[in-house]
Length: 90
Image (cartoon, rainbow, N blue to C red; front, side):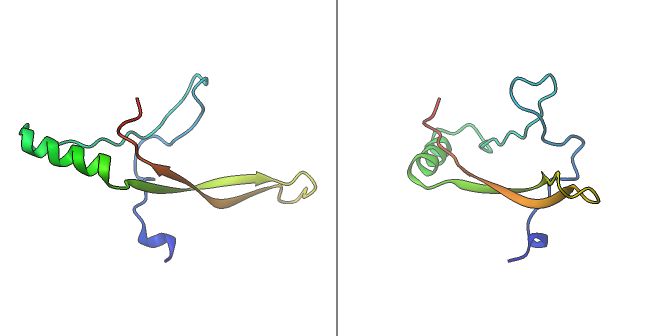
């Protein structure tokens, strides 16, 4: 599978950056929202999230720095992070 088959998040105004303690810290937040407030739908969503294996993988461009390569010290590469959603985690 090639990367052009995935949804790209580069069309948003801000990019992910920083760490928790930085003055500038940006992140994406994913929410599960029901279409209506019915108890039945809430129970379906709750059961799905607690009993199914909900995961996602984000691919992003990272860089490596080679201090011995004076002509081209910064090289980009594709990196990824695998996230398993756990609705029971508080």
